[in-house]
Image 1 (cartoon, rainbow, N blue to C red):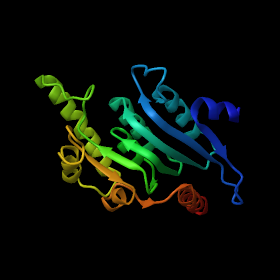
Image 2: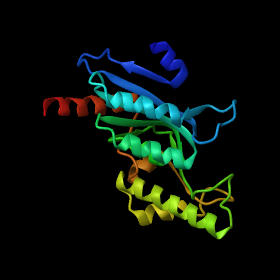
Image 3: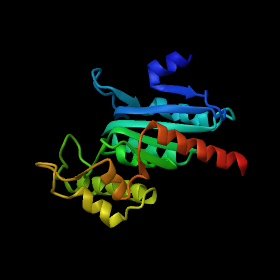
Image 4: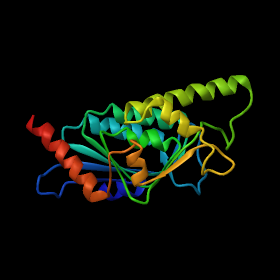
Length: 219
């Protein structure tokens, strides 16, 4: 069963440590697939698979904590934000480790956990909500996208040390992203900006998670 979970969903159970904590590691990789199917050639994290898996973990007394390993280019905005809200509502201790990319809707997904660790070379891209690379010009579409941007901004700022004004400024910055709007952070820059807790890798992420589990167990 464990091999099947790894192969199908990028999920495994870590339970070999001296402290005996039972931790689920969940990969959020590739494109966040939501209401529409992505290309067969695209590596995806399927929204409809993640929700029941997370619900079963939340309901299980045998799970002590969850490690999310994130390397995503973004994807379905609505479903990605819903998944981020679901992660944030879990009662189990959670840590997110960003190891490659956290782009677009991957940003709220990556900050939804209780604690966050970003690899030194991992990149974060923040940009306005768009469809097929552009924001459509119709007033109704603009107002809808503006509403989604406000939801994303509110979620990120509630789970980080970033103000709404600063995050909105990053969204529309005409800086390093050529012919586009947005901001890129790499590793330490993202921590200094207030988006993530610390720079590190699997060692630091696991140490944080074990610490949180121990605090809850002793309370």
